Amino acid sequence: MSDEDDIVLSELDDEELVAQMFDDLYDGLKDEIMEATEILLERGWQPYEVLTKALVGGMTIVGNDFRDGILFVPEVLLAANAMKGGMSILKPLLAETGAPRMGKMVIGTVKGDIHDIGKNLVAMMMEGAGFEIVDLGINNPVENYLEALEREQADILGMSALLTTTMPYMKVVIDTMKEKGIRDDYIVLVGGAPLNEEFGRAIGADAYCRDAAVAVETAKDFVARRHNQMAAG
Ligand code: B1M
Image 1: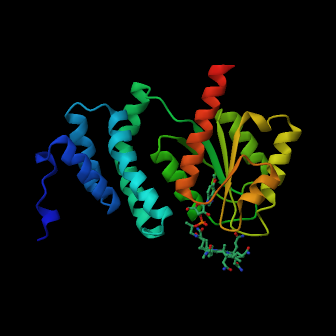
Image 2: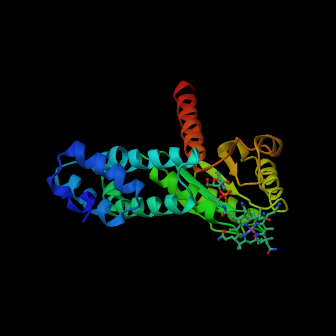
Image 3: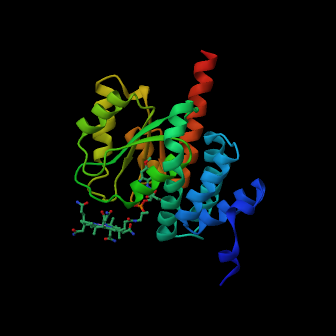
């Protein structure tokens, strides 16, 4: 039996428990994360505190190591899955307490493209960082994006493309938004392996995001800027 097996989560003090949750998230241990989430709530932690201090805190470490090439896709998917376990407990409570949300993002892979692993990772990491996600799945024509942005009153549009043949479709979506006079109502973030910053600029996106961690940081930056602009104006 390893030392890990001997740890009784309920016997740890708050600080130790949060540190243990960081480790357990990193190792993708969903049951442990769910148990620890329940324990913190029983101890009187607010759902939003558990989300930000324990789950998002742990996921930030995962995101950084993913960005730096220390963790790889399978591990990140496991960590994201463990996080989802904790989130499933917090979600109804957060809705009740009306905790502040970071913003809402509509995300989908563009028309003609069925790659969704990267998009799913972005969605999970964004959710972990406190964003509300509306996932449109794969193979989305422009109408899907526009309809969802309006219906959901979203703040951010995220588009993913993995093929050189489908990435130009992102420009079709942005150009249509311009034609309809709604382009500046949304923060538009794009990503996918064949893209780069120059492409993002050329098609009129607000930013190209190299990976899921960058997507989270970029979204946070843009939302903060928006809030500041609104406060100033
Ligand atoms: Co395909 N595929 N594939 N494929 N596939 C690639 C993309 C390819 C580069 C492989 C190769 O030839 N070396 C190549 C594209 C070549 C090109 O266009 N220049 C290719 C091809 C050709 C094809 C088919 C055409 C093959 C065929 O049928 N002849 C076909 C296309 C089908 C279609 O879409 N219409 C096809 C099909 C498939 C599978 C179905 C088998 C499978 C997809 C399964 C799935 O997604 N459910 C698949 C896979 C797995 C790949 C590779 C091997 C891996 C992609 C992946 O999941 N990476 C890929 C080769 C490669 O990229 N090395 C390849 C892991 C993922 C975590 O990374 O998606 O880059 P990524 O996401 C990152 C970032 O890019 C960023 O964050 C993510 C996380 O860090 N990001 C965003 C992504 N989206 C974002 C959105 C954002 C922000 C950031 O919004 C804000």
